[in-house]
Image 1 (cartoon, helix red, strand yellow):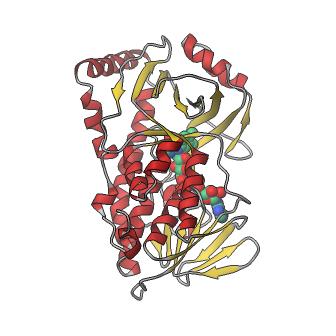
Image 2 (spheres, helix red, strand yellow):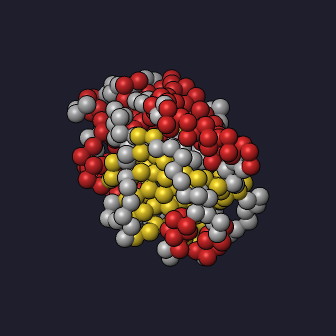
Image 3 (cartoon, protein in one colour):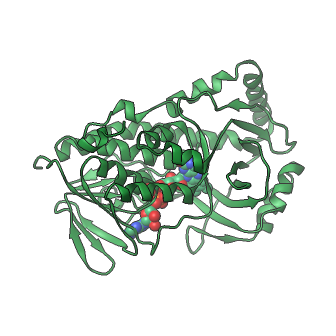
Length: 395
Ligand SMILES: Cc1cc2nc3c(=O)[nH]c(=O)nc-3n(C[C@H](O)[C@H](O)[C@H](O)COP(=O)(O)OP(=O)(O)OC[C@H]3O[C@@H](n4cnc5c(N)ncnc54)[C@H](O)[C@@H]3O)c2cc1C
């Protein structure tokens, strides 16, 4: 592989949170970046997002702190709650972090990333579905049978990436869990994430700006056989699954008017994330279960690290990017899976776990922050400081 030129032509497939962050970081590094998005316009599902301090560290270095504050709610605590009684088991403060923990609408984050990327010179092409690539030649193919070439192709096209099979052969597998997502309006709620835990099920609620409440409900279910991987569902089905829940939670579920059901899928994190001029990023490389609120945060970190790694020869740079990212995302994925087990306990194991959590909450609440420090206090912008021309600007 020849050495990288100081300014590369980079094509990114997918303008989700990962693709947009990567585009912004790479354009700030002086590269010529084009984003290809299959949707006719940038739009996001009506859902919330928890941007944890590790993701915020990157967005703030990119100059987006004030815009985030304007579009988000600063989270104060996370409250594991007994989903049967409605009793808060513990309350772990989130406000002592180096970067704020925020709740925001996905569409708001996409809009502010898109604006910043375009202001940095990124070209955004919508209505362009990627169908394949030639990693050695740096060729990207589209559904309309046209192709372009680039010095580097970034596959940021999500869980069902069209490009991932060129690098890794295992596709997504159903995890035995489904998630409903809903948004309630006109709700006054504390700036806290509540995790309502029930046997084989849980619900996470947190507020969003504008008096909205984001709700994600998860249940274990052995099979998933639908037409797509998400679809509209009847709110009555959601209510039936949680009919034995605390009255406060049932009251919230009674207010759900529209709900979408998602099968939760994962695929193994590949050993290699790149081949020739093609590299994977975000969910295309490492989808994670939503039980640690990390999929988007890890994709944001990926974008930063990739841009900094590219100060070296391409093959070395992509190897360095993978080496920096793979252990961290594997650890996060394992932690998300452990949360799934802990949230869904039943019988004596549930009683013992809740008693232990309650004791930590009363006697040593700082242990929660300490236990999450590897995840939330990790700052990739310090680990890999800006190295390229544009990234020095306002760091
Ligand atoms: C219920 C639920 C709750 C979640 N909550 C959180 C949370 O609170 N915090 C968090 O960090 N993460 C959360 N996540 C995870 C997060 O949503 C994903 O990890 C994140 O969106 C991944 O970003 P991405 O850019 O890699 O992929 P995506 O967001 O999937 O974006 C991929 C983009 O590529 C486009 N695309 C796809 N195929 C093609 C193609 N062939 N050609 C061109 N474009 C294409 C898509 O249209 C899309 O715009 C949650 C996930 C779920 C299911």
